[in-house]
Image (cartoon, rainbow, N blue to C red; front, side, top):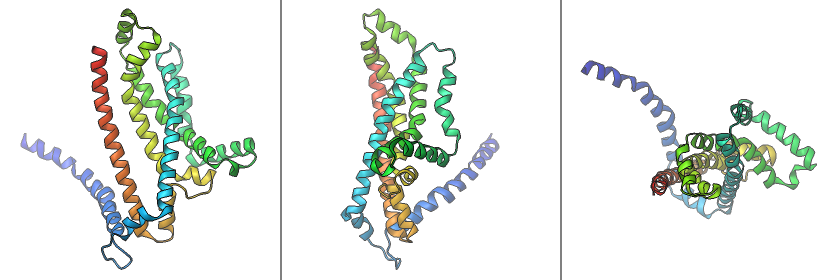
Length: 267
């Protein structure tokens, strides 16, 4: 038995090596450059410079605004689609779901390039609507990531709960608001996390549709391209902390809301 446990422990060694080499070591390098200057001396100038520079603060809020709007648009489009597919009796609804997932199989750059050509034909000049084009591009790219978790959650919804609500006199709207929507919150939270976090850092869409550095990922790339690893590392570290806090908050909210939703349904 002890020999078997020892062999099982050995299986973890490759994963541990991978985490150390490709997760922990790069993070240590980023922290080192974030808190040092060009001479390798410890400094907090990179940290204070981030919060005192209008460029970095403006980029942070712009990225946050793009992420919020993209997430809201994706949620408004994805929830009705996921609800119809999950609760309907379509014989080929898996085929319809596949239509939304199929673009993910195509190269990302090709999809955005095709979308850019379509927007160019529609608008005539992309520079007139940079923010709108960015939201369209982000929504087009991340919409499947919002549909799938909501669809999966609604698909697993117990029909007996809906029947019980109907037997107790609840109409369709009240059943949706009191039963379906609360029980689908975990899927909504998962979709928000999967859309919001990459929307803050995905600079490819913005660069291809707007040719700008007004997003955090693009700003980090600009610093590293100009060999300013110290400010670039500090921005990357701050963005990592923001993403970590957001993830912890959403996970905790999802757990609490799921528990309260079960209690509300039982009552």
